[in-house]
Length: 461
Image (cartoon, rainbow, N blue to C red; front, side):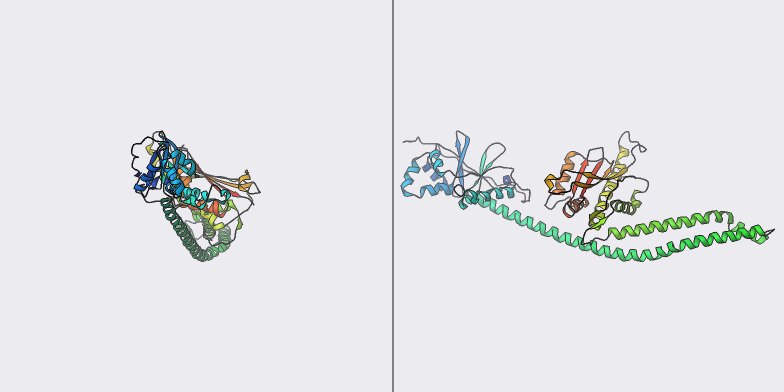
């Protein structure tokens, strides 16, 4: 059969890929790829001359009247030609016939496929589950990449191997750095905990001394006042110098204010004792084993520590349900609540600064508020492989300006990402403590202008 001569095949084009450094989110469209397309009506001889001229070309895309038909690699084409008996036959045949002999499984991927995922799919081509169609040689076959405009390119496996090797090295380095940072952070918190624990013991001693003697001082003062009252009642006339002394020291006011002063001292000592106890609980970060704690007491201790920031500017609403003790790492859970409540306070303070610029702002109706809600709920855990469906719900909501759905999605993505992120902040740390250390759930809800709500779910085992 004679074939009409064709026009010369268009030279291939090699894209340079992205000029940015590769990252864990890099896609195969960022790698160098070959654009080489040949109509299936061309002969094997013409393809052979074409491949001989462009020796770096891993293969060609086959088209039928401009529509994608398939792909034939350089390796597979040369394998067909090494047989001397078939060489002349294949040289004279159109590529459609050659392709029927050279047909091999083709991996076709969209251009937005991540590099590591593409590498994983490429390795599956040599799976032993189908040895007739898949073999180790399939690892050298180029990948067909479909562009958004429905054009096709070839990705050399060598380029993919190199990119995947670099990204795996980056991922390993990031994991190592993260583990080192976590170790250092744990050591810092443990050292800080031991330091604060020693300081709080030193503070508790004088506080205990004041607290223990307040009762006696109160009783002694009342006895002295009774004694003075008895003298005044029995003496027919108070000497002038005593009357002048009572006026000088404002005895009537002193008598009324003494009990109130002692009560204020007692309240201050009690508050100081609670704050020191809260510090002790917060800084016990070196706990190795989980312990049952009272969630409400934990939250109240945190509120007591940040009360200086809240004062009267922010209203705290507590909707506490009856909760059983929760088994957890106390120090880490204290840190989570500190992070989340502080985050809510920051949001509200930022909103307070901005809101007067808005029209229609009414401070009496827009008082910054943090609402903390706790309850025991039932949740479907079929997909979580957890037998008990009872969970502890802790919801921390504020009425700040909030953020858009797009910003919320970016935040959720950054929390769940395994890579090193710019959002490496208190929310990221809290997310990891809840999900990784305690097997819980961490949800963020927000609407622009309607506040932010962070929901924590802890399994009740």
